[in-house]
Image 1 (spheres, helix red, strand yellow):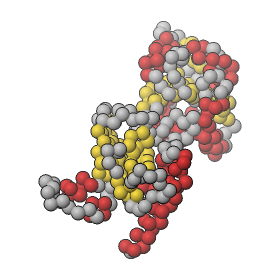
Image 2 (image 1 turned 90 degrees about the horizontal axis):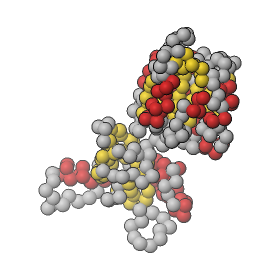
Image 3 (image 1 turned 120 degrees about the horizontal axis):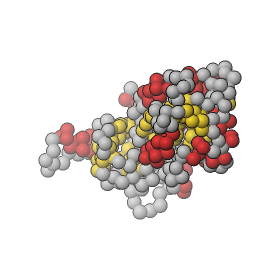
Image 4 (image 1 turned 135 degrees about the vertical axis):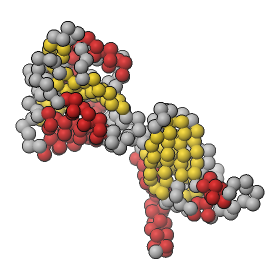
Length: 346
């Protein structure tokens, strides 16, 4: 997900602390290093350059902050003169071939601009009704973005932002406008999570799965530029339950480590999901990890348990409908077995 922040600060207007605001947004939103999230910030674009920059960056969200007191936004042109951008003109700044999924106007009275601009009706637009303090706007909109990064839909992120605004006891209100309300049910960001699905060990249709279960481990919501993922566990019993082969050229520790991890090289995600289909784990409810390296050199690590991974696969629709009941039962059995094993160890 890419967010394009544009600060509108014409020279004759009162200078807002927008640079500090956007810097704060970047720091807080990227603090957890969410994979596949990018923020770009422009604070001194002329109105002539906005359209080409938006086309070049191709953002998912266009966020504009600045002066909007009377149903128009104030920009500057190349001659550094102030230009008022009212209804109709803002939509013209957005290229038709740019797939923007949401526009956020963090300015006073920006609802007037949204409601009067017919060209914006096709895109979900968030704006304030009334004069909003910059600090309040930043708190509320930060909540909006944090919700989106958690995987929430536009509607859910907006609802939670409205609730956060209520805590500020402000007279201003937050609104979201869109002609096609079904767009509000979409999630703009799919956070990467470990997912787990059971694998039948024979050709017959299974009505149950034995423990330890044979499972495949994957990452859903994976960035498309992943070079390598290592799936592994810190549960040594996975290796200790298997006899060390006398003919192995590996040391005992290296051999055990090979049993506790699976490596996937250069996968091409299908629908954003990567599976370790080359081999399977025999699992109870151990902890699982996925360490991924991307082509830009960045990396990220995910943590889960087998049952949590099954829950994630179910919630994201990665388990076939006819197997859901069996898989839910398996997750329950895994948790029960883990509790019993913990009691036995204690």
